[in-house]
Length: 110
Image 1 (cartoon, rainbow, N blue to C red):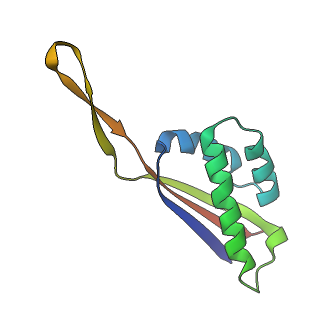
Image 2: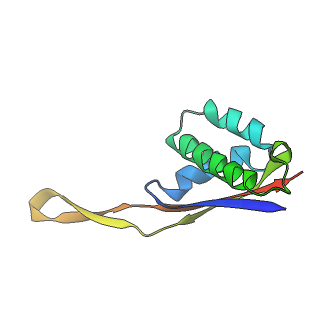
């Protein structure tokens, strides 16, 4: 049985989250959370929070054993970008894209 948790409109670039997500995909939940705890990236803290949310969702279902869960899949999609402008030389302006992410974590029983 699968359980998922979704975080939408997270203010971090999807490419930064995907690098960290590769490290924990396919591992048991306890191992994944311990690996994320020692990573210095900001996205590691965000992913840990989403994984804990998925475990809490699994705890609400009586037929799922929480101790046997593993991280089946982590999908990181791009959300809408915030468009900002920065002044440049000679009166010009350049556009800056502040990217957002939609992160989905799927847990499954081993």
